[in-house]
Image (cartoon, rainbow, N blue to C red; front, top):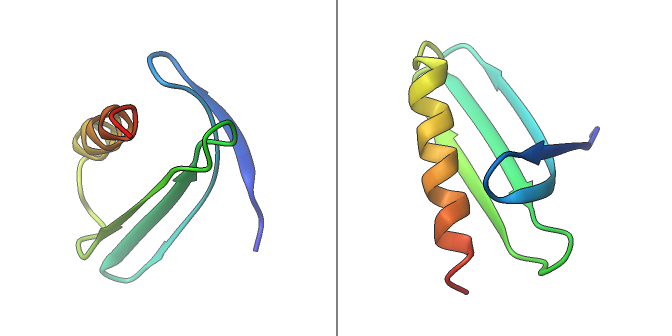
Length: 66
């Protein structure tokens, strides 16, 4: 499994992995400074990327509460 590092504009830098197949989409994101992470599983491959980005942003914001 390959991991990548990416910076968000509002929530810092994360390590993550994503993937998908017919009808599914997934992403895992881990904050290396806290060890907290989120997993997003979607059972519709054709979800608008803006909707997926909004969901990930909300999950990252929730991580800051821990």
